[in-house]
Length: 125
Image (cartoon, rainbow, N blue to C red; front, side):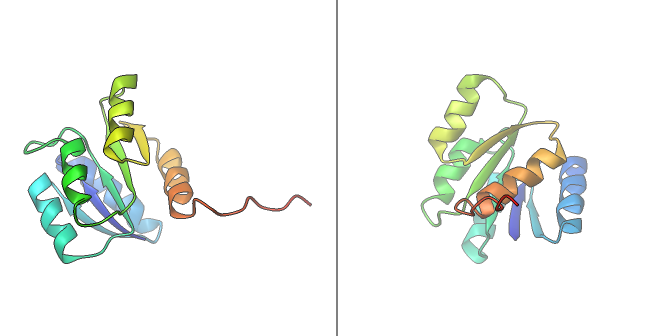
């Protein structure tokens, strides 16, 4: 998958991008909302993974702006973990809301679920 990772913390972005690339994904990193908007205008992505607490605008507003141009599935990856935050992420259009620090196995499962939402479960033997 072509993934846009929006994360302002350099070490977190670097680690997560590395893990995603090891999984076979092409990853572009944006540290700011404005940078992410430019990326969405110039490239196509299969998935967006976005922090909510960005320095220039929050991830909820950012996804709203992105939605004006494309309907790429998105995962919120955030320290904002109260039920109201998750509800706000869903209302903004995020397909999933994952807490930081992220469990990478949970992230991989979430990516697989979003990438193939209509996939049939494996047949039982």
